[in-house]
Image 1: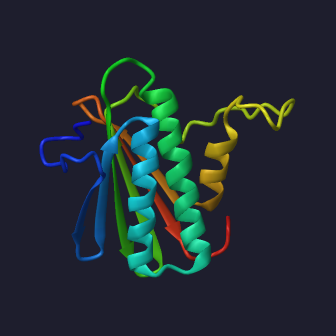
Image 2: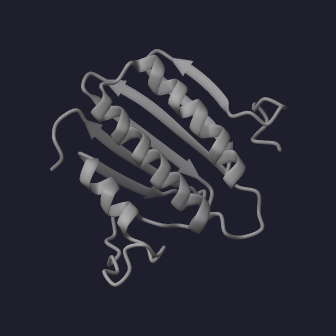
Length: 157
C-alpha cells in the first residue's frame, strides 16, 4: 500500500516530529486506520497528556477518521488521510486532511433517538463537539477537506 511518495514502503504510517507538532499519514482504509491509531497513540504518549485530554484526543481521532473513511472514502479510489497533532500549553490542536468527499462536520446532523444501538449517525459528531473547544473546516480548491479540532484541558462545555 502506497501512502504517498515520502511514505515508508512497508505500509506503516508515516511519523514525523517537529518540536511539538507530529504528523501521522495513512491510507484512507480500515487497515490504514488501525495502523495509524497505534502511531497516534505513540504521539500522545510522547506528549504525556493528562488522562482527560488524552481521552478526548483519542475520541476525536477515532470519530473523525472513522467518519472520513466510512463516508468520504466510500468510492473505489485510493484515499489519503493525515492528522497533525500540535500541543500548545493546555491545548491540543488536531488538524485532519483528506481527499475524500466534502463534508463539514460543523453542520448539525439530527441524531435519531429511536435507536441508540444503530449506526444511524450524528452521535459521534455530537461527542466530538462536546469535547472540543473549537472546530474549523475548509474545503480547499484542490478538493481536500481540512478540519481543525481544538481540545482544551478544561471541563466539557
